[in-house]
Image (cartoon, rainbow, N blue to C red; front, top):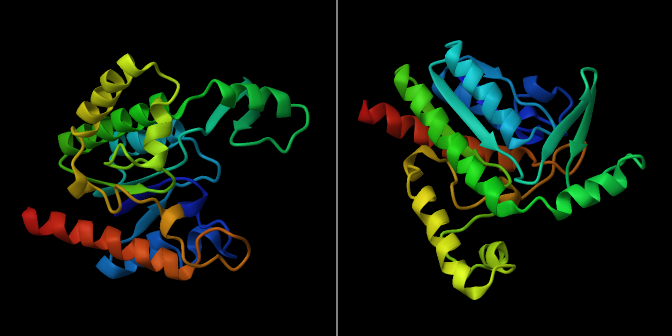
Length: 228
């Protein structure tokens, strides 16, 4: 059994059958290696939500292989009541929350959110290893790069005084070096960056893009299997 967690990309948003659609990458991977799958992805998920659901799945021993697709770092959920959820994304469609979301994102810097993804990845890796299970990561919407000359990476430190930039750069590098790139289908390029077609119903990744991601995930699974 293979467990898949993630956001709308992994859920199959933009496809008529969503999780059951044969053209989305979790189902293609399942076909490639002849395994049943669990698609636990949820549209709009924050990376915290993806992490918690994957951690619970590992603790409950739901699968032999776990795949976590990380989403955009600025996504969050707040719950003002048990039956209410406020999605904090890049913008709000709800006029009641628009100003709040804008203010929240103003103070919601990507640097600490990316550091959290590193921590989530390390914890999931250790949880899976402790149960002799395999862990794989998919970069859905992280725009980090190994080169600090990259425009986005420069933007992470642009608000710091020059004397602090090297310190925070080294902190980031020291943490990300603790991740194993061989566990990642696409560590340094996101699905958003390699999308080459659209889904049938909207602008989510299309069948060719899903096939490309499925091949990358399958390659990691095959490599892990050969090393056992």
